[in-house]
Length: 167
Length: 149
Image (cartoon, each protein chain N blue to C red):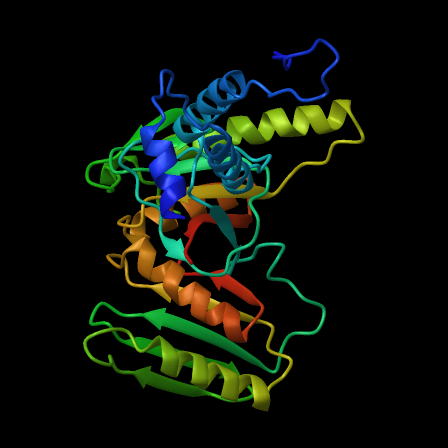
């Protein structure tokens, strides 16, 4: 063994080649791991910057539905801001007596009208009662209630609450 | 690509891995940048008002409602064939969700036809606590209805 090392040391090496076979192995493993952990869900849920979704351990797979997002300063319906909030709170002047928000209600009403028109034109399409609520975990229940009441007024009664799945 | 041996007909050749490594590096960089490692799920919740999902042909023997209070307490109420009100006090300064689960399991043993619980909360309670309570309720009862509006 020692003689073998001595032989190698004595041999003058002119060209140093990098052994990249092992590197290729490592890269393959990393690539397979990334492909496995890559989110492949058909439903695109992208919370806005700074939003903290609540964490839960056991949740169902997301489904395609009308998205309502509640962040610290706005309520968005399908990505379009419809109502401003101040520290997660609605302006009391915008609230109706039935507990809903005038602006959120109007936006959801428009969405419902579009869904109804599509359903009338195409018998294969049904009016969907599902609504996906993407809310920050710091949102008070008062604000959640207002949005849910606005949604329920227009037939969106199947609430889906988006959460981050913990380990 | 193929570097031949000493003779032209040699079967020994080395695969040029450098280009493969280049591809892998680009792919890994792209995936690391674009990958979302957050796994998002959803909780189903119905509406405890006069919504379609709350209706049933045969109403359950008892109606169970859970209210989260501001002082980390939980109020568990039953109406119908049995009237009761249990106040679950906080344990170590936190909501005692373990006891809520136990109480609900006992209720389900006694009244197996209970399929849904109405969850309400005081206005200032954070959404994260609602979700935590929902998760606990779903362990014992299949349906959770949000109420209070």
